[in-house]
Image (cartoon, rainbow over all chains, first blue to last red; front, side):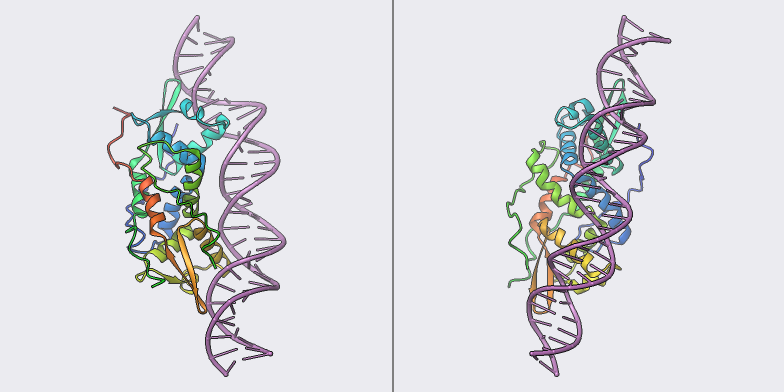
Length: 123
Length: 123
DNA sequence: ACGCTGTCTAGATGCTTGTCAAACTAGACC
DNA sequence: GGTCTAGTTTGACAAGCATCTAGACAGCGT
């Protein structure tokens, strides 16, 4: 069902944004992840999957949490999967999804800035 | 030039995705940030600004790093600013931009998952 | 006052994307 | 085999977005 068309380039070993500027290729690669996250429905889907104890969720539980049609949920799940943020497997009648922690971590680290210091202006 | 049309709701105190599911409102709010990051040019712009020692960059230095027209860069900077990721100030002829660490941090923390453990399937 | 330079805004255009209904595939069960 | 349920794929359409050109605005220097 999945798992083969993903560009498993693992192009993500991202030091934080504050340490050095991104190359164009890195930016293109990383932007795919953020673009997938940049949609409320997808973000909620991801959070539903990530927060689930046991680590995996059946699609039927996800569709129930929205007022959207099935194909729409399916579409968003595909986008998340193609971005490498989640993966899935069919087991019998149902399809289960789980997150890919390494991918989320990579994006997290990229944005992990000192949180306070800078503020160089207005001084 | 800026600083007033921003919805400074500071709706971001995000615990990681793994701890609990997002509300619809939080998802909408947070997705704005990720959507802004989900474009290669904007990601590079942000990295150019964030990685700059001194913490701020003049627009003229940013436009020089791309083959895009000035208005396009201006547009992307506006998107980043309206997402609360950067802020700016005019000083004389030039306009300077800098990052908003708190906002980046909030998004980073949301994606900060245990990085390894889960993998509950395929066992 | 006038022009010059740096930056932003407005409007237009073509591509991308979110959504749904309809049709399809995969497994379970009789 | 037939049929039922769970999910996905396909195709269509409207809304959104990245990009450009042309024009506006803000400081600076003369």
